[in-house]
Image (cartoon, rainbow, N blue to C red; front, side, top):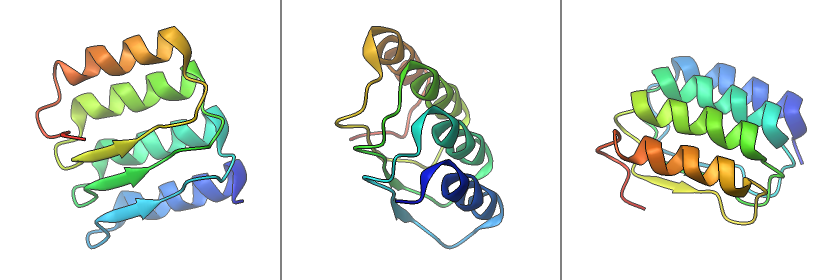
Length: 106
């Protein structure tokens, strides 16, 4: 488990990374704060196509941050949020972002 601190470190690296295409952070307890950090990195990362965030205790706030990032991101094609706690508000934010996102397929 990397927790929030680990997620923040990975997010920092993702901002400048130009080679990584797949990242599996499942079962790491990153929570909302970690999801927010990853979301900020998704706004500027141009190579990541697959991101697995299942089993991470992400709530509505984290899901909303990811949703906002999806509006800007043009490379992510696969996003896994299975077994988080995003709730109705988080799901609604993701759904609304999908109206703008043209690259996410899975």
